[in-house]
Length: 101
Image (tube, rainbow, N blue to C red; front, side):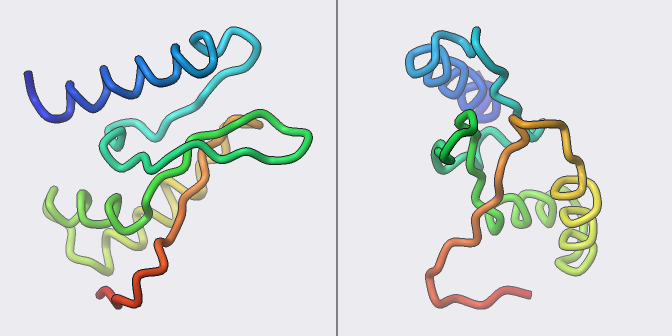
């Protein structure tokens, strides 16, 4: 089983365990980035959403052949810019003190 398949299965299991599969609401995902999930974000008066590590996502895009500037542009336009409704995931920049690029 590939790492990606393992990440998808683990995330499916977590969502089902915590939210019953999301019967009352839909937990939306950024396709192909399950291994970049760092947690679930809770917001007052809104449904929980998945939280992704922005830097891990950029690293994955670079690993797929984009340079860092291209990865940032793709991420900003195609991922952050893809509003899918109330359950749209959030993207977290981890505060590690490291700089990228």
